[in-house]
Length: 230
Image (cartoon, rainbow, N blue to C red; front, side):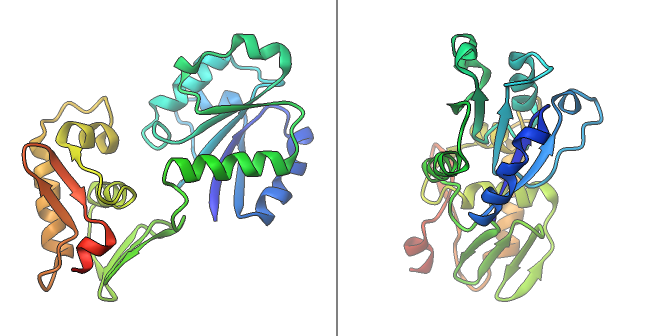
């Protein structure tokens, strides 16, 4: 089940989309635009894609988009706007927009666009987790298991492992991992990444199995399934 954060100030008119999205594997949580700007904003977790309905939006679109992109859970997620024809000329992809659809939009068209974006951004693999050999990462429960046994990991260790596992075979520098997992506002050094990687390896790489590989002069990568099973 993919989870959609739907930001709208016109829920009564957009509510019919909810049931059709649910039938196609998308659970939708609605939030008013003003709630996004609150200091104590309560965002649902986890989220796979964010949709902003600008048709009757009471908040300035640029502020709304940039506020969301500053939030660590959302900064790497697809951001899709629903806009009217007159609003098209106001769009600026510098806000962090991934895509947009003009209104009115059918549920079928929205669903197909969301599926395409999730596929393109490598988020269409098991939405509730990953399984590789004896390693299971349960995103919904925030659990890691090895050989069926639960492994005690910290929140950052889990987020780091989840991010690497979502991009098997792709090498990331320590700086990239700091930005992606800890966020741009984090001022710690790259040694933080090394420490967390070392702890993760000690917890999940049992019996000589390797899941996280060190790429010399670059950083780290999660081994693709064939490499890990070898």
